[in-house]
Image 1 (cartoon, protein in one colour):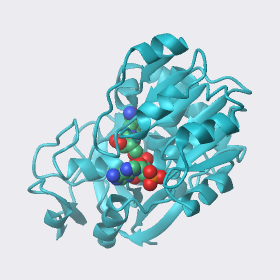
Image 2 (cartoon, rainbow, N blue to C red):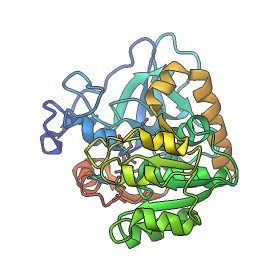
Image 3 (cartoon, rainbow, N blue to C red):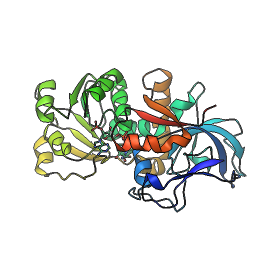
Image 4 (tube, protein in one colour):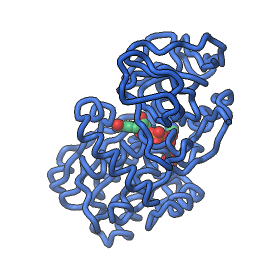
Length: 326
Ligand SMILES: NC(=O)c1ccc[n+]([C@@H]2O[C@H](COP(=O)([O-])OP(=O)(O)OC[C@H]3O[C@@H](n4cnc5c(N)ncnc54)[C@H](OP(=O)(O)O)[C@@H]3O)[C@@H](O)[C@H]2O)c1
């Protein structure tokens, strides 16, 4: 097998595409022939030693991938050879093969495309948990999605539309805004040239968005919170811009608004039944054509470094796929 090996987490330049022996699954594991993996922002942070979870060295990065079960370890009863599956974790996916805990493997419904499956659970799971569970989004409410052209942002746009909300997408270029409107956003704000507060005032007739989905942080966060509607919910999803914003607490008081944390990984670990329910609804929406990952581009698995560069330079629209062909 081949895998991208991280022996020293100092950045993407230190990763090596390496040949290694194909492992046998340990008890409780399965071996998956990886069909495709997608790039999530935490994959970028992990190889720079900046993510909250630090895998022991050396490790193979790649938190989300799809494939076919090739071998089953002792004690695994719910999976068998040739099952089509997806999996989410912290590592292992940027490879041709991976052994993973069977408990972390998601059997795919019939008809679920394997490319889509490599780019689904992480982003759609996060955005569904955030908007539906944490924010209690209701039909007819207005949602502002910051970083709307990115991975979790593009999923949030589709999920909010599927839930019957009105969606305002904010992104940093005209092209990204057009992409978001193509995903179903009702309005867009190009944050590179428009004033966010003024634009929101005009689009919402001065009322402001009921829910704000923020995977970006940085400078726009306070301006966005100042625009939130009465009883609004501000979802803290991530800090792709780098700086972690600070908020004057009086703003929450003045709007009767809530700052709501979203930590999908812990939600999956702590509330497995709620996670299964969320995933079942997403699979149903996928089958009905309400949600589908927007694939920015596909590359061979061996071209991972190009994909990392594209994400780090803020060019991605939707999801980047690394594929083992076939
Ligand atoms: N809380 C959770 O459970 C959870 C789960 C998954 C992901 N996340 C977090 O969500 C964030 C987004 O993840 P993602 O996979 O969607 O990433 P992504 O596809 O790269 O999207 C990130 C977006 O952030 C914006 N951005 C602003 N400044 C940036 C900068 N300096 N570098 C890169 N992007 C910048 C970009 O949009 P514009 O160019 O339009 O500004 C970009 O589209 C990450 O912080 C990730 O850790 C959190």
